[in-house]
Length: 133
Image (cartoon, rainbow, N blue to C red):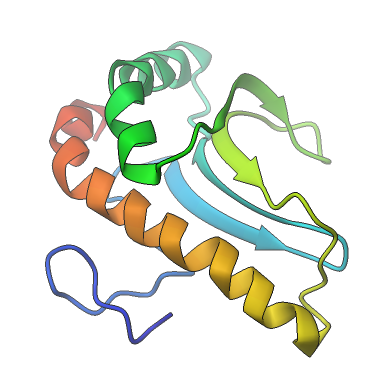
């Protein structure tokens, strides 16, 4: 995916996508069983995290229009270490493994259009989140 420029025509690292907003990440996750892509709001202050989530809710229709699908909104997600975050994302609905080369085409077909759509969304929406810097 490194060969695909972002919405502004710049080369970017898709795996470590920079939103330029602290505690706000676009993540792709794949292991030996599943793959998911999500927006993660991990601000340590619960009130600010909630405000950021609410701000995304204001952009929900635009986000889903860019993605051409509805994602799952989870205001209180706890990871395997008990860390609280807010997540907006989707999981690939079939079993795949990042360790099996035969699954790589499915993973690319899953991640690539969604990251490009997230970038398109973010190129316009990011200005509404600058107050969180």
